[in-house]
Length: 320
Image 1 (cartoon, helix red, strand yellow):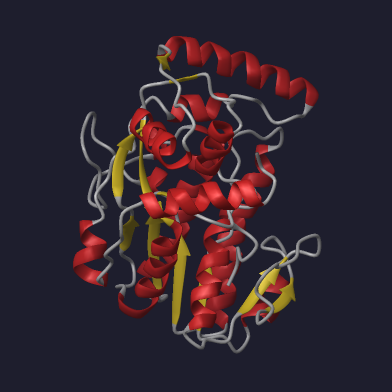
Image 2 (tube, rainbow, N blue to C red; image 1 turned 120 degrees about the vertical axis):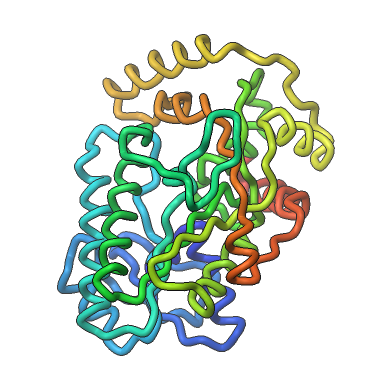
């Protein structure tokens, strides 16, 4: 599997180990796996095709979870090399190794969302609807996975929404919302919305996709559609800290994103408010996971427990 040092990948590996699976993880030379001593770490890189061929040899199932997930980069070509070319390299290696099943982790950002509506796997969407390099690179990578499935490769695609919970090391943009809230570093909010899901349920959905998914099909792994205001109110209830009450207009947030990203382009530091993230927030990412429930038996639980675990984990590990 790839992505074990990331948020979703760590939880997928943990659940595989708990059910008795032998897990081999592709890990870059600069990374390390913490908290999962049972894993067989294999040094390699998605951009190094030869290392992938060695890594997948003898594997029956491949979980491709790794991605370059950033909302700001000064070198977008690196993101495309990892997300698009890296996916093509890994699928080629898996084909040569004759693996039984490949689970490719896409993103809910590749799902078509109707205006003021609920998106699902059947909604048509084009690359022109993809905001920023991350979404565009993941859209192109998903096309690579779908093409491989059309050619006969046993590829199943999952589209996680916004997972929350413990071990969000980086943290993800959703985890950063929680961290900023706990730091009292979020004085206001904008009118946007996300579909939240417990990361443990997201990981379970990956295993279900490997066991029951149909090659060439996409499965949204999500749970609750919530506005950002509702998310902050839940964080207030769970943490005891007050939620921000001021809602700022989108135009103000956009201007802040332009200034923040322009300054980051000069300094190289991550912007406080990435313009790509602000542009994504213009649309509420509300979706349904009904297809995954119907075909995979994916039944996620409420997200409050995951939010509470996230709060406790961030506090215990010095993030706030």
